[in-house]
Length: 315
Image (tube, rainbow, N blue to C red; front, side):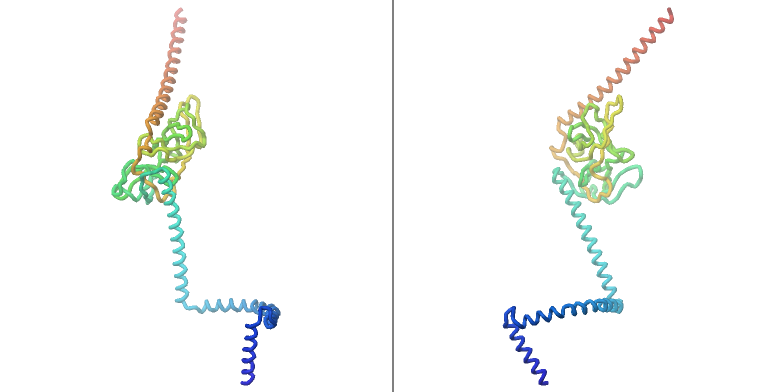
């Protein structure tokens, strides 16, 4: 008992001196030296104990109750589902933000809708959206995604609408080159590509030109992006280019879209635009008439030559 009392008193005295002395006092120096000397031993002991600690954890897991394991699995599944939900919400928010960007950039009077279905047959390219006549949807309204035009409403029901995509071969959109303002009609092809038709060879169109809506017809707002010219070809005696357009906005894998409900005066084609389009049509028509006249003239010459030959035979 007495040695224990002596050790307690000694410990109190040493602790008192340890607290009162400076950082570089003798007791601090002794403690630092002991720590340095025993560090390798403590490190070796920790290293040797690691496998036993791991083994203890394994046994602890093996002996855990089935209820505990079930709770942990349920928590893990819940956290995994929550992460997936948050990731999907973030991606949806980003897509909607892009739609808002398009709406703001072009000052579109529009409403958002979600695509809920695709084409039911191989002969048409359409999608179904979750807005219908009850939501103000009407036949003819243009539809865009975040990158530009994708189609036009062709059918409506109370709560849904059918959108004909511009890649469908029955689709047609008045369009023009943003650079040269050369105008034509953008049509879908059976192979799913786009062609800008009825552009006269007298117009200036180059590969890489951006194709936008012209606003003629009052259906699509003027200036919306459609695609980029990927090739421009002209065969001998053709009066129109063969222009292939690479679509700006993919018609596949869309989820949210904008339906343009009305146009402002600035979004409609101006009188000059309409006059330019009419002049282009007139030039093309005149070229066709001139070609026909040239053919008729050739036929007349052939008839005259035949008459001369007949006269020669009679003589």
